[in-house]
Image (cartoon, rainbow, N blue to C red; front, top):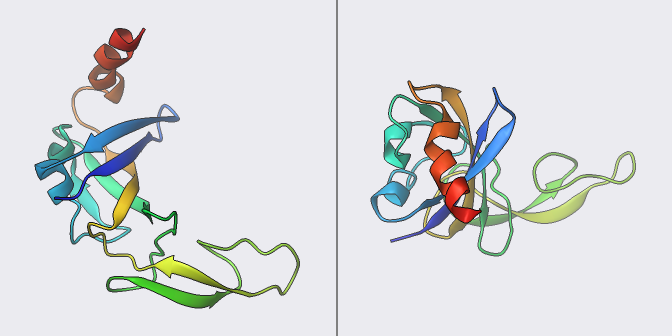
Length: 132
């Protein structure tokens, strides 16, 4: 089974949290695409709705939302995810991943869309206190 590092952003507080997704938690992401919304119950946050905003594979290649299917592709890019031009009109052929999440991914970026009863600070506070 795949293991993921999920970087969960909280737009209300402006804080990001790192969640290790293993086993069943990681299974909730397999087969989903960038832009999909999943239930926060899969990560242990009941009542939350979480949107997948991006992902990166084991070599650091980002996933593009507009590419369906699995695997890597080399595309001629003028802007967007995977390439930032340094001058007007610049294009470059870059490797990017398709949007569907599989076991090759290492990091998944996500943000909270709907909040549950408890705040995310309450879930992560004991872990931060134990680290000190």
